Length: 570
Image 1 (cartoon, rainbow, N blue to C red):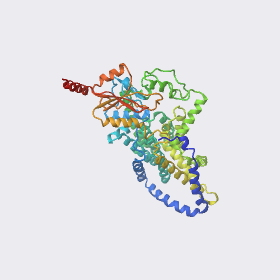
Image 2: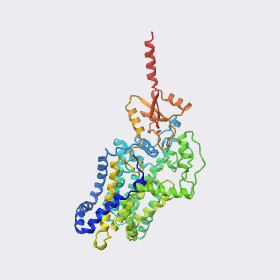
Image 3: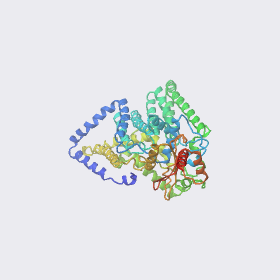
Image 4: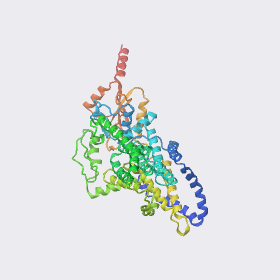
């Protein structure tokens, strides 16, 4: 069900065909073609003029559109290590805890991106877990993802209404909805960037309103946006917020004394209050998970020191030993040594980033906007928005890992850049013909076609990062959930197993789960596991072959069967 981003973006023929279809009427029948297309554009412009209605429109649109496509793109199964870690966090919050006690047999359950000491918890910041917890309380964690994606599209429109005309902000919402709220891992997985994107949109939207008229609401939303950023993507948020903070200080400095005091009391102080509450909450969360209020879980190694390079100037550390073969391979041979400070590794890192970001932020027709980029220097009002985007991209370039949602704080700024490119493109009228206007429509229509093709082929994400996940694991879990009794599934990997297809993940309450996933560790550890769960059916599964076998029925059932056989003896 996967389609590589490379093959997808190497097919420009559709864009060229659309360009030809739109350019011919623009050249031969310019007035008639403009009257026809403006009928549609004016309808949406009238809707966009009602700013609050437009914001709610996109929130409902994303939910309605994605639910309407459930037959083609079902509710996603988790498949990436990070997804399971976030799901553990959400389940922990649903259980009314910030962290879980360490299980006495944690070695049998050890897995990726999960802390086991001093507590059993996810290593990631808490914002995504809160969203998944809300979804789980409403019936399924994915409901939280859906609501976050809808809030993201609405927040983009609300943000840009403070910077550009309302109908262009509306267009940015359309582009974002189609690009990342339909066939993207941001909405079809449990680890996308929607939460951080909402935070970034709140920051820029609140500041855009604050500089015109400081108010309590703008101050609270500014503080709330920064709080969401810090609790979702703290590293990138530092780069994103730096230009905004500088702009805020310069804005206050330029005000007369009385107006400065009024702005501080109305907006800055409320924002500071919200931030104090948020940072106090984060410190408390850190203390409950790691035992240190100043040490986030992300900075605490799961068990042994992390040897992988995080920044471009770092080299991988010395090998560390893990008793579990999958963890040992992952941390010592797979992703840990993908970067070694050579020129080739540096080139590969940047190529990987560009290729992956294409699948989230670009589509083939974006190349039509390239000439308009040279005119963006004229957009003085959007200078801060673009600076926040550039600062976030700069921070992204400093790290080794290439995941596109690292740029999520500036996602709203990116769609502002696209819309401004379209605005400049529409001013291109050679020989009095609306050539630029026609090409701007090609950009939108080509995006619709691009995403529609993914939907038809049931591709939830061009990179394969969302949607079907580990389908065989999900099927086995559903089967055992409907089977009487409780179960333990021992996972034994065969030759050629990919460490990225990990089956051993559990919920917050391991002992209370109907199905428990454990590593098959022959010897003392398996013996302890069998003794600890005498009332559970023990199964063994080999993911590569999907072979499932029962190793041991529950102890209570064996006693009953033994007594029955004794009673039948003469």
